[in-house]
Length: 249
Image (cartoon, rainbow, N blue to C red):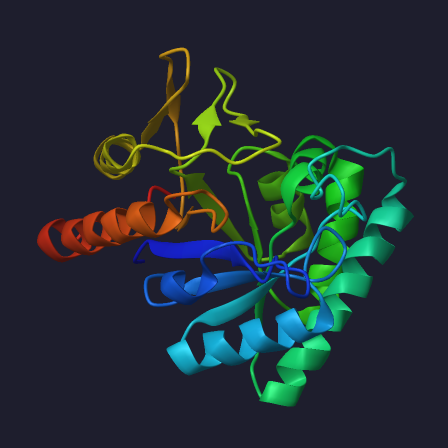
């Protein structure tokens, strides 16, 4: 199985442009499209779906917490049924635009703090899986967390992610800043190369963390996202074509 490249997109609001979507669509295999709660407006969702389809990029849902001011990066105390409703509402919104464009829903990938919450809490992740089952699609998430455990228990296909533009903590968790910052291209390339060749991520404090993954994420909102994605695309394609290796799953 070839490692793919994905990016979070459609996170603008009206005249307020956010992210580097147009350029990234030439580089990625899959777009995770914001569905309106943490970011994204109806016209933006439609435009992102249309552009992704034209570029041959598959489209997944990227539902977040209802917190546009905090960009979905502030945790909330939620019951499982609330998480289910939040995810179902947003996936349904995106699915309407996908159906109108004749495009299939590829997967579900929670955004920001929701992603972290359901990685730790199996009851909340079970709610996400309820929606994945309804639509018959895989879930993107982190290997070795509730993302993977609950998906396996529910029979939901699971694709593990690796991040080249975020730091990992010693326990394998992601260190997410409230405001995006540029990742040096050489640092991203080093992370990608080590992960592909050795199946590990290097934590911010130096620990080597076993890392299994099917897909690699580059965030669209970092200042140098296009440069990072261009370099990572080259690493993935070169590694795949020269060594024949598959993802560490």
